[in-house]
Length: 158
Length: 379
Image (tube, rainbow over all chains, first blue to last red; front, side):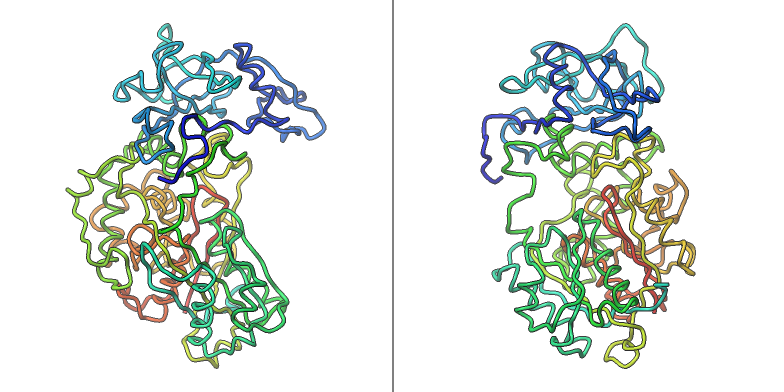
């Protein structure tokens, strides 16, 4: 693999004006989403204009942070060094309860502070309920990770 | 109307290898001159160029090298593997509307000896802001996510992905120009291969190749007087569906209904050749599951039926629809799909090493999962 400019760290999200409120929410332990102020529909990824009503400015709202696993993968090397050291790990795509067409990528972990590979990938099921926790990625960047939401029963496929 | 107004009249390619010594610029210039020689057209007649935004050589440099005349049309198409058919389609539109008379499309890429595009970054690209920091790093991870869901919804298995990999490898084993010409692949090899991103293994991934290719487009009238039998550009489509996101198309109603569907709708709107009439297809295959998604998107079968379509040699010579008859990106060369265009031309000239008997039509597609394009070729 070619040398990375940040051999020890994860890839950082290039946070911009559109996405900054999302990451601000993560720092406060909240999952925040853009919402069309005319139709109430969630908008993701965040953007300056609502595709549902171009003259209605998107606003930010807090969502429950609950969803179900829509799909998942288990990457193996060759990977960037930080990820290669943690492979094989899982990446899940979580369909949000409020709008299942919003599917957030993240990692299913055993709990707060747990490693990326803290869940046996063989036990992950499409449709299983999960909820967001908020974990530092690097520096002051906080991202959602996902833990099993054991109080709820799985659904057939999200 | 674009229908049959322009034709591909010259093609050329370099050898394909893990490493070629000449620069991407030198390789591009060589194949462009060779494609013009195949057509019997002087380089000074070239007045149009088209290539990929990801191509490292621009028209200015290429025109200076090959001795082109005054250019009146030049176009670059974005989105990597989605661009190939559109490069040719844009030339066809330019020729049909009189914006140029001799157009050349090319792609030169040293992906085999160069750096992997996803390696070496400290920050995710803006397009990948929501996915790559979480370890969904490579195109294979992004496609594996859709693949797992596809398997869940339709009961597809690794056996079906193996059907794709083995069919295409069989084609490469008959093509001396293919990187995998001498390397046979068995179902056991496939099943035992190492994971790259579960549920995808090594043999679900395309090659990493150095190589360059070019083709020449002129009007149908001019094509009749040239050295090679014309291959007509019967129909052309591009597709970027509503609310689609490049590679990680996860934020729409139906992520398994990708750009191929929008592209196919446009292509068949103007095509007299229907999916059931197509004799042979070259379907963009950076990863095996893209062929399953493309079979459905371009209407060769219904949603969820692609796995069964691959069974009993469905994609092999003599099967329901022979695909990627030179070995494709999986087993001939990975050059952003431009080899699929040239193989489509060879099928209609009757010179493929896996020739479909009396083939009269060939569909060539760009990458599914990115803003894409497709061509219907006929002889």
